[in-house]
Image (cartoon, rainbow, N blue to C red; front, top):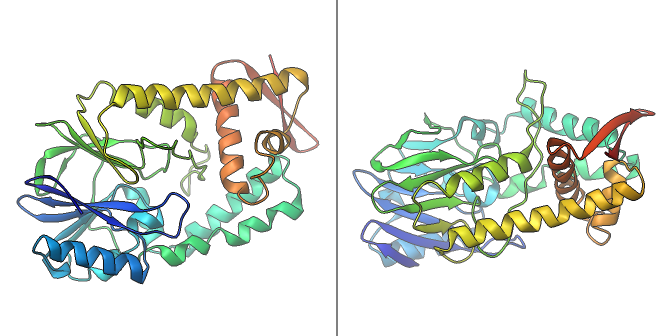
Length: 320
């Protein structure tokens, strides 16, 4: 537990993920709020309760939970706070915490269809059967309040809501307009680059989001918001925003340059590129590595550096 100031405490809980521990934030204001809720394991719950007790609170004292995004290591313990009056977040969180079966089927169908178009062989598509595995660490609940860009946080009017899609299509961050404190979820991390994870279009829509383009736009947007200190979902608190943004952009552009150099040698499907960029990881983390590869292709296409055709029912990318 870390005391940020009189109104914010950082609480840290373990996760089963490679990213390591996750942070939640206790906000004191007109309402006692928890921003994010860790992962749904007994170890995380015990750690969270102990840290609340250290600062004089019990779980039943929490009046509302505010979510930065829908990933399990941020929503997991919401169901343990059955007494909360409000659960607040982006509307795109709803199908995940409501366990919307129609949406999950839509999600799986999208991955199967788009990965087939991207040249992924059928024998690798068994990973789709594992897409729901992380849900065992996610919490069940229902949003009572939907918030979006420009809104003020209920009970904490000094915080403005900033849309920060990219890592997730439900991602929001919260900026204290008085002192520049930025509660950023997984949008800005000092030690790693957040994965721009591919998600399907919403049911009823046809165009898929392009998360890497969103992420670049939204980290750049942060440079003009007057942010002084970033309270992240993982890792250390930091204030060197310009340096971190520059590093994230440079890392992404370097990877895009590698993709472009491969395409200048020979045209490739997204899967063929993924095999070459991530030779050790792609079989174990196909969803993440393909999301990253497709993100780089989106970036290069947006820059007018590559084009794609469909050959035998598969996307083939060519350098221009």
